[in-house]
Length: 123
View 1 (cartoon, rainbow, N blue to C red):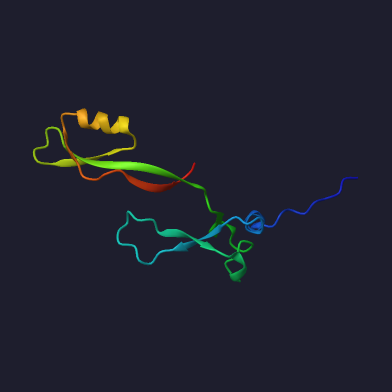
View 2: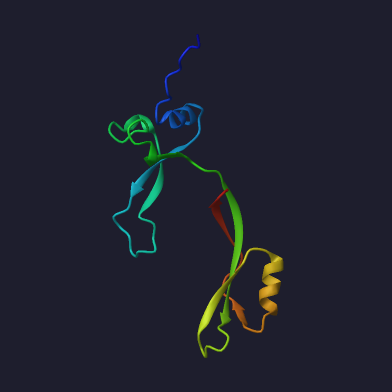
């Protein structure tokens, strides 16, 4: 006869990650959106022990283990839109090779930034 195991609690993986010293985050809905292009929520580092009604056990979809991040360097250029008169567009380079390729285009006007380091979630 096999021993039955109870199903894990819905937020068990959040509690385990937190107990292991990892940072966990709660989804906070934004009330300060300036445009519809902005996300309607943001993730905030938090301690799950302080949430009585919105804790990982009650609302596991509101919690996640904070993803790792990596640094990415980018540079922005202004370019002409082909056959569009004075209209312009922006190109983004993520490497020296991409920057060189953009500079060699006949639509390239100039770089408007130096290299900028940004953090992005690591997939």
